[in-house]
Structures are given as C-alpha cells and as structure tokens.
Image (tube, rainbow, N blue to C red; front, side, top):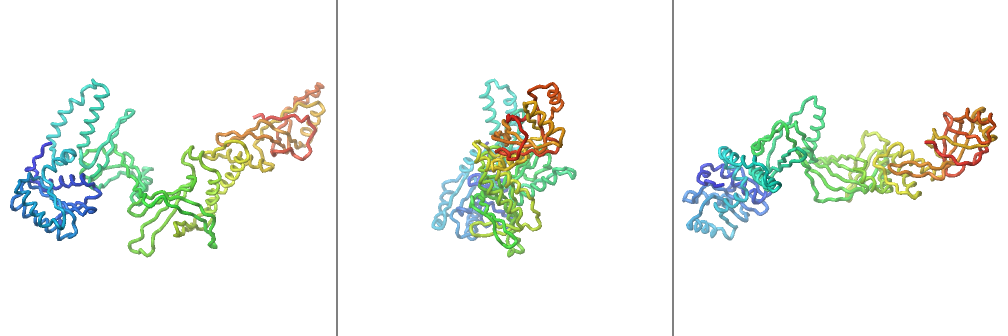
Length: 566
C-alpha cells in the first residue's frame, strides 16, 4: 500500500495513532505506555519504562524552521519531565536532507553525554508498515478502496479448485493474509471442520492494551442466568476464567473490535484465567484443630498456581494423590481498614479426575488423606501452614457431613484385600454400593470374621440318601426349620471391573427351607435310594460366611459341595 504522507500530515491525530500502533508492535504492548497529551504530554507521546526511552511523534514531512523549533521544545520538556531518560526517539515521516541530518546531529552533539538520540524517518516507517500491512489498512484504507479490492478478489475466490489441495492451501494463505489486515489490534483464526465454520478473535502480539466493555443480555427467567453472572463475577474478581456462551452478548464497546462487524448473537467470549506461576509450586500442610487447641495429623499439600483478579486471588493445590483438590480464596485487604489483613477461605473437592487417574492412585496414600479429611470434617477449626506462617481457618457454624468416615472404612478394607490376595485390584473410579459391600465382605472374611453374605436366593443342591432326605424334611419342613451350613465353591465378588474369587468359603443359613419339598416327598414315597434336596434360606434367615468350617453341629449329610444358583 502506497501512503500519501503529505495527506496524512493534515490529520496529526490520525498520524500519531498510526505511529503509536507501530511502536506498540515494535516493542510490545506490555512495555509501551501511550501518553495522553490533553493536559500536556511533557514532551513525550510514548514511554518505554524498562529501557527509559522517550518517543516523540510528529506528522510533518519536512523539517522547516518552525518544525525544528517544535522538536527542540519537545526535547527540552522531556528532559525537564524526567532527567534520567536513557534515549529519545523522534518519529516523523520526513525524507531528511543532508541539512536536516546535520541539524539533528547538532542536537545530538549537545546531549550526547546525557542520553542517546535517534531520528526514525519515513524509510523506517515504511519498512515497519511493510511488515505489518494490517496497521496501514486499518488506519488508511477507505471503504471505496476496500470495495475495489474485494471485487477484484471475488472472482478468484469463486473459481473452482482446479489444482486440488494445493489450490485450497493457496487460497487459505490468501484468506489468512486478508483477514490479518482487517485490524492491527485483533487477529483472526478460522477453522472448518465437520460442516462447521468458526472464527476466533484474539489480541495480536504487540497490540496496545484494550478497554472492552461487554453488554450482556440475560433474561430474568433464564435458569442459566444466575450461574453465568456468578461465573463472570468470579472471573473478574479472582481471575478464574470462564466462557460466555453464544446468545448472551448484546454488544461490545471497543472501536477496533466493532470494526470487525461480528454477529454478536453467534459469538462466545473466553475470559482466560489470569494465572500466576511465580513462587509455585509451594508446599503446605493442613491440620484439624480441636476445641482445646490440639492439632491433628498433617495433610501434606502442594500449591501449584494462583489466579488473580481485581478483588483477590484463588490459590490451587492438591494432595499427593491428586484426589483432593484445594482452592484458597485470598481477598485483598480493605483499603479503609488495612490493619484487618486479608480474608482467607478454603474449598476442598474430593474425587478422581478420570478413570486413568483413579487407577493410578496408591490406596494407602489415599487412606492417609481421607483419614485427615474425616478429622477435618469433625473438627471445629483447622490450620493451614505455609513455611512457618500459620493461617487459622474457622469452620464457624458448618455441620459435619460424615461423608469421609465410610470412605475411611472402605479404604482400610480395600488395603487389606489388595495386600492379602494375589490379585491386581485398581481403585474403582466411583464407589458403588456393591463395591463397598463386597470390599467389606472380603476384608471381613480375611480377618476371620463371620460376615453377612448377599446370598438370600442361593440354593444348596444336595443328592441325599433316602434316610438323609427324611432327616432334612423332619428338620426343615415338618419342624420349625433349622440351621444348616455347607462349603460353597465358584463364588466371585466384583470390585469395579475386577472379579475376585472367594475360596475357601463356608456358608450358613440360620433358618433353612427345602424348595423342592413336593419332589422330595414323591421320591421318598417311591422308595428312591437317591433323592435330590434343594435347600435355601427361609424368609428372614441370616446368611453368614466364613473361611473355615462353622463349629456348630449340623445335620448329617454326605459332605458334597454346594454351588450358587445365581
């Protein structure tokens, strides 16, 4: 793009805005501070703090006597404003003559011992604009010229892809280049996948900081409204980041982004988390504190990073297993009462991130974590220790949840089973009631206890002699029922995706019944020598299991093995 510098000189404000964008692109937006000259700029249009460099913008294309006088005045004001400047840059679209350069060098001769002086002329400006055509297009292209450019390219875009994929890549390169020219501040990325086209708007590297005012449209009866409002508030106050979904943005007040003509009803906005990693990771401990001030066992934590907003910060951490996630909320001290210090709150979240995470967790380490969590749940207060600093956290009126005590018992049982049996037993991602029950059964059996068994529908199949069958009938059917015990083979209990065989296993019914009593009676009447007898728990019967035979007497039987029917 050819630039008419003489025409631009007639609009000094526009020229200074152009130069300011170039300087931001050259040095980085986080380093350059634009000076608002409405109250006097002190001989500075831009200031680069880390290298203490003053930049002065002038829109002229010639250095006559009056222009030179203005340069000298600006230079003197800059020195008066800050005597410790290291360098001073003059940016002006001038084709300097030998006399112009001689005059500028004479200025350098006066101040060379104090600071460096550089004249960035029209050649430097045109070189930088060649590197960043988006800046020139944004500032200088007229709507009429844009229409002409678009008409010229329209035929090219509508042509068939005769060259196949190379043609597509070439057009994508052109489209990317054209989209990059839409704004010197906002860059555009685009993607087309699965019939869905998306455009991503991002701040270009080196762009000056932008003030963006977002107007949201949230209906009063929208059930997602309160959650969205809270998420945005938290993102601003504590830098946690969030996403504003399409349909909620009414408009955005920012001149550069408005020029992109975005369809706001289709636009989502990502507020990235304002992450702080300096000083992390950091070790910490958390202990329960009883009413008499006694501290419990420590829970060792690692604080990984923080996010920071206008009101304070969130500090994120985990325990050694990663199953416990910690978030500290640290509010900034009140400006009106700084002596009160910061308010600190804490959120603990327990549970795996995914199946792979749960499978890799050491149950004994997790047991230590959950044991401390149970004590924290019961304690009236707790103390967080960072290095040697103790932060007291009062539970106030919070009632104990009782959530962790059952998990402690289950993990204790899990460790017993895993260590005693020759099986690979990963932690389930989610504990079901069946998992908890089966772990308790296996651990109880391994401890030598008599444990209730989930076998209320189990049938013991016996092939008995006629005499044994009559004894069973007398004991279980014509009398009040009786206890019977037997050895069971083939039973397995499921823990997550694993099936654990239970062997040996002896089972007892506290009260038994014969499920095929009619068949047994008929066989005995027919004087059969072998009679099948099916014995099951009677209604209300307890079903107990153990790893060794029951010591109590039982009816005589042939000692055959029983198998579960289901």
